[in-house]
Length: 123
Image 1 (tube, rainbow, N blue to C red):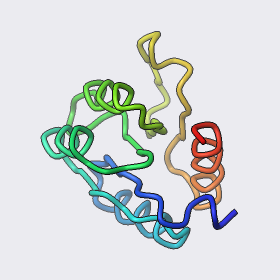
Image 2 (image 1 turned 180 degrees about the horizontal axis):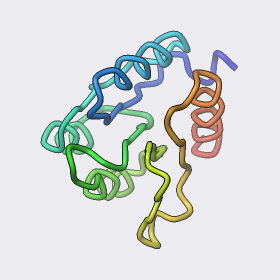
Image 3 (image 1 turned 90 degrees about the vertical axis):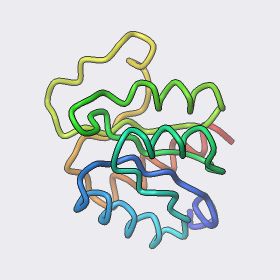
Image 4 (image 1 turned 120 degrees about the vertical axis):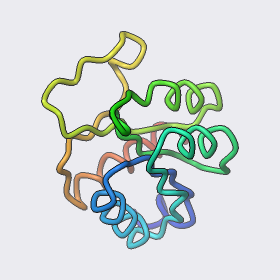
């Protein structure tokens, strides 16, 4: 399983410093390189557009707005992503309704499993 993650560049889009730090630590422990974390829409959009990444973990709500523009860029570039949220209401447009999700708070094991599924599906 370690080989699935080793050297993978994972974009983290998360506006909570605590969650961003925890996610980064989990990813690094798996052997991933963390891109970001992007804590606001401007940096998230720039990294989604220009970053050399293999996958992304994107919080649905960034600083009061939805991250749909980031998801559109990632999708257009063919970069797989997990959508995260701490809110019970996961109201999503139809185009994103079938995308992999990871409810917060998540554990290291749940992040590892969902990311493994995402990377295997995209291989």
